[in-house]
Image 1 (spheres, one colour):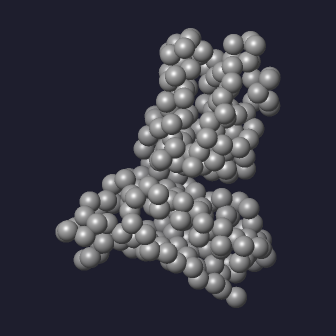
Image 2 (tube, chains in turn yellow, orange; image 1 turned 180 degrees about the horizontal axis):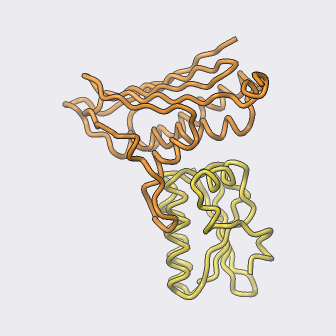
Length: 109
Length: 143
């Protein structure tokens, strides 16, 4: 099971907080959350992973697809607060080259 | 000291949760396993299970099911998936990490990087995957 606790900050940055595990079941929900924010014109996104216990390749795929879509719309997608498993998986896939975590949600932009 | 765990489940997405739960039992029973070894093993198991769930086709009229057996030993973590699906003929040497901006295609490549040994075999009645992770603490003790 996964939940998304999202908010839009005063500076217009959209924060997506997946709480639970990102896998083949929940990754499409992450993609839908990203698409909805872009559709509303929120193209600078932060995915706050503090509550994300686990990510698999489909979760990574949703993040990369979101990164591409936000950039195409003139924005960006950045990660904050990755847990140890997420940091390890980003390194094992070399995706830390394109999804480099930022220090905090507030400092993401 | 070694311990063994197993589960039999339908090849459906909901079964991923059962694998996480089984591994929680393993970690609870074997508290000395390094966090990075747990991460590598769990990540690889979920990728292989997801591959079975997403790509398997029934060999006959029976729905696809898999059996997961996990062995925890002082020097290694070992897992074996067997299923009753149509033999898939996977070539793990072809599982390479795609371009950074690719939105898919990382699953088996990620499992390969996470593990020390990884094999797939087509069998008469289905498919067999074996996954081995050498424990970091054991490697350190050996040097």
